[in-house]
Length: 391
Image (tube, rainbow, N blue to C red):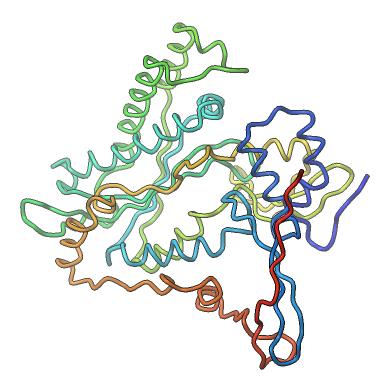
């Protein structure tokens, strides 16, 4: 059995070695097939590329194109940097809270079969809960906002849908035309958010069921019966739902640095894969049930691929969304009022309009236009390599 222990293997190696067999044994959706192909061939000759030559010492360098698939662990760095750069011009100079909304495990199978519908409901229920309570006179009595990022996985790659949200410690008071600062601990108790979130989510779920927006296949086929679906709802209503608020950030710069790690993260980074041997994939993971201990897990390649593919999102599904004062429709009015009140000058983008080479230099200090051999010459593209297209 072929093995890779060093140099460090990656997700593309797993698909190259075992993807063909997995595809032959499973009927996969087009989006999953496209993702597997892209990751397997990312930055290889299949994707095409170009040849650069030094105008001084004539050194040549071949560079292959990246796949640009949003599930690829090699293609998120620049996207993340550009998103963070753009966000810096939006956030306000106030404290922020990181709130995580999680749905019960009983909904995991339903979510996998109905990804777009269930994830849309998750976004809607979480955002409406925060915005509704922020307007309540008992709490903030102002319009707040949030940035929400969807994650669907746990460290063991199993399905674990949850939202990471960023909420400012305050909001805009339209009546007084001022920024209203919230409590340092939070302007609403988590114990209050949880039941509101649960109620909104289950109400939206019932509406989706009544409007025949849900599919019931495989293990959840029995939920097509009203009696069985009602039992599921009863179980979900009886449970306590998890909404977790982490300690506040001091300022926007801390927020941007922290949230940037969440936005373009994929289910598994290449650095977590330690070996591929004897038909198994070995990877590192944190066991949060054991005080976050770093451990290793060995999975059969087919099970590893199955788990990774659980997290391939539907085509064009938006995994980062903005609400309240951060919503696009409010940025040119409400958000500008907030900035004016807080005497905050918008931070200018550092990356807008730059080529990828210049953007890379700004974010990493690496200048790919300079020759790495003579150190003085410039690398100039002298030939294009066509992308391989299967017959």
